[in-house]
Image (cartoon, rainbow, N blue to C red):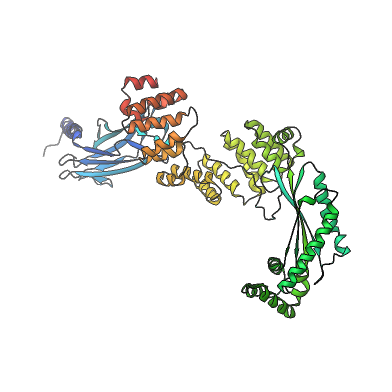
Length: 583
């Protein structure tokens, strides 16, 4: 064999390179035979992500056995582009770990990817960029359009969770109004009670009873209430009892006598106070309820069993006989329970007339220290101006620093101004003062939601569940942002605003969405009209679309740029009327 000279070697190399180039050119020329299917046809963003599925179908005798290909989906948009992970392919005779496309049979590739959505991507184009390589030669193909634009309707959610005011401090279990515990009441009920104790089978009023400290306090309170302009005596009552260990006839006679003796005494004491017409009297032959209450509070062994047995007897005479028999065995009943039932109860009911709203508000802003918690909290409800509200709550914090409601409510005001970050330390301080309060948990969840911490927000809202509709609404926001629109609708049930309507739009319930929007009566709400325009576009109601979009962009001209790139309105992009509205 003759040795190849350098000239012949270069000729052979050139032929090989030309062959490679020719093969690549053929692949490029026939690239139109590759079938691309993109799902969905128009991309959508949900929960901050955009999913795309691309099917590539290569025909038979297309993919060169010794070639490789890099196929890269690229999203292009104004002033930028985002390249998704590439698809690496190879022919039959390439030894590598890429997907093989048979020259003889062709092949199919299924590609799935998710990428973070950016607002600039709304008006965009997804293209497939391909580069084929054979040996050292590479050739770029023409980019293949796959999809135009991204529907970003889910991003229209107003991420404004609802926060709760702290009005109550804790449940009132005393039965007596306490302004530091209960919400504000202008007319506050109050009562004073005193007992006159009688000896067994006696109706004689003893001096030790009529001169006791408890009786003096009762009489002083009742007489003082008459003289106090801020108090009004509603009722004075005498109720006389006998202990349930005697016969019914005996007890009725004894209770009646005790009622008369006690009433004469009280009338004598209150005559000068001019309260005689308010005195009401009655007697109870058997104080079975009083007996049960004293037994339940006692330390008597087997008290529960005793009460269950006695409750079986509905005939008062029989029950009295049984109680009398029990006193022989249980001396505590005889010595501790029954003596307390031989009494007359003196009861005075009073209404305390509070300050007027004008007085409360004036004091809240000039001398807040003169008001109690309930009054100061009420004062804040009397003004609409958020700055004035905040000052009142700041006064509350200064005067009652250990009461969580001041800190919580200051945070509430800041949240109404959409200053959730500034509200956060107030809610955190409220939580330090009362860690178990569900109202505070909801408000901390609201802050977490604005910080995009969905997991923590959902945890807080779960703890606060049952406090109010606000918590359900907030859970609906969490579900929406997670892309679970049906669950969001469940939480939103019974509520109507643009967010509830948006959830229904996302599930295709356009009539329901329109009802929510029409029921939402906030004046000049651009989002209300913008969502109606989307419904008009989706349902081919051009009149609804045009009128609503015009109103929306009149209320908020800054949204013209957004509307002009909103793929919800893609079919109107070339319409002169749309261009005029969004110009």
